[in-house]
Length: 198
Image (cartoon, rainbow, N blue to C red; front, side):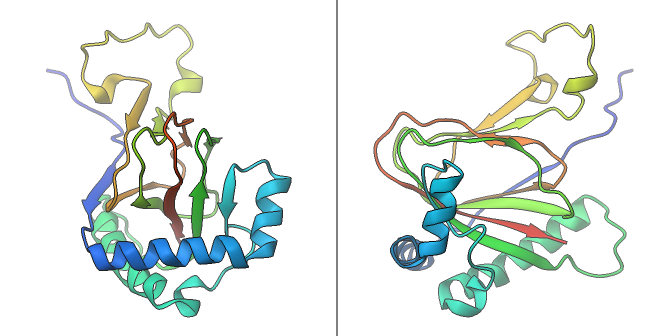
């Protein structure tokens, strides 16, 4: 018998509300034009495009489309917390939410989200050839002499799992899970919204 230990959960859902996707796309593009502090931060940190990560912390109150999304995310985070068997004594609380406009060829190096329970991304617009999100096995730095896995082995045995985004895709994971956005090869702007729950 072989038992799986220490499972790493990834929550995946579809939010196929075309009106909401259109409204969010419009809002993200408007923010990318109007949010000078966000544009400056992106330039200083060599982020290829725009992010409100370090400039705006009130998007759900500022914009009705972000407010609607925040309510949806909160419901999904509650489901994910239940699946993970979190013993919080409360529902997860949305702590931060930011808009991303990633230009062609842009990427985001490997990182985690400290001081959070659940992190995630919601994809609004995804041009063909947009960069995928890649998750890293958290045991990777400890593997020492572990052999590589066969290419035909199940996905959950691989050191990296790559997911190709699509509009309406919602992903959530525990915030300690290291992830990155790989460079895309397509043209156009990938619009997404990232968030943390505490």
